[in-house]
Length: 232
Image (cartoon, rainbow, N blue to C red; front, side, top):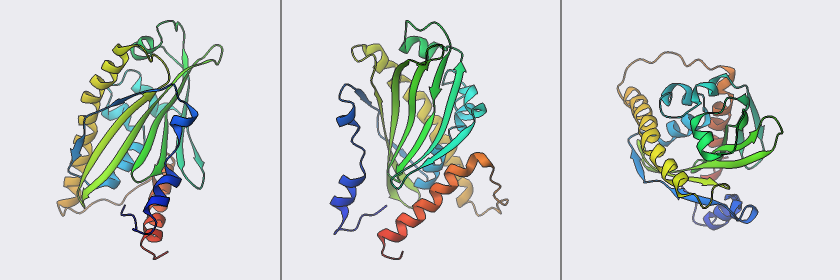
């Protein structure tokens, strides 16, 4: 989205979440920049529907097969829209066991997808001990999107967590998983873009309740574009 020169500074400072002020004891890993041959809206919709983890990342994200089974709720504010999935009593998987070595039983895990704007989406959330409800830690994935052309985008990803701050193995693991997960997303998105550009007759789009978040974000994005161009 293009910012108008007379309002860009105010728009940026007013909408960027101040997570570093609320949680100063976090560590962040910056993943390599990726360039994707697809329109930026395809990446937004991919991130807003985390059920894709079950299908696209079945072999790369431990426990990902459970995501599609978790009920979805929406939380909307003036500044953001969050598609929430709160996994309950999930079996301990190797990834969580590495993150929290002392955890012995099932966990509750949040799989949020929060649209903060067309350039910034947060996924992730808290992981808690299922027996006591005690929060073990929070890990978020910050997805930053910059269109390079109508059918090309630059994709930046940071992981941020408030646990294992002195454990370099977690940083290595996050970066390593990123090198396997991101190409799977890119391949899916570029394949869809190729179909859209092929001129083929496309079937009528059918949306289910699980698509509510992405559909609402489409309308929110349209409103933002109209407001920015002065057409609202």
